[in-house]
Image (cartoon, rainbow, N blue to C red; front, side, top):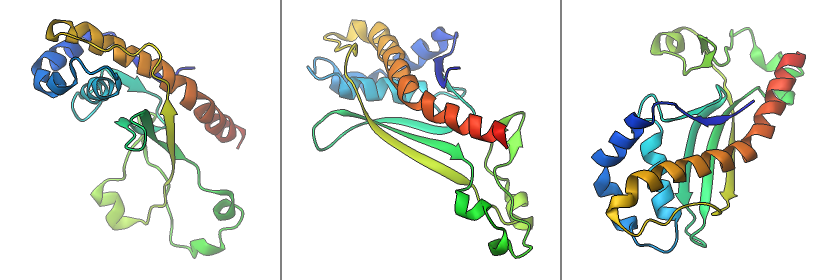
Length: 181
């Protein structure tokens, strides 16, 4: 199972990279690949590109890459759909017959409840926030504007590999626990 993967429509992503060339301008020639990788990622995911060039497992709500202000390293911030914590599922005393609802699903995807849903029922949705440093191995450092397309595509592929390696075990465990119920 993959939690992150690259869409086959690379032309759409490369067009978006060209359209947002100004976003990359300050990162060209930087010896650290972090800023460039963060811009390449932000162009590859919603809301910049919807549907995203980077796709993810249905439990992933958002995935961002940021420069860590402490050391300049690369930090990923991934928000995952999670079941409720055990203390809330062990007893429903807290429920008080209010008809609490969890994550709505649409065609197998977790979605935010609509305004109409929120007007009718209370919702309690569990999320996990995963924040982790990512290695810089394999990230490109383009030195010229003419290499931005290929470098952005490579940066995204490297980030997808690193994120999948970190997030997949967590998602697999959440899915295994869900299947066991």
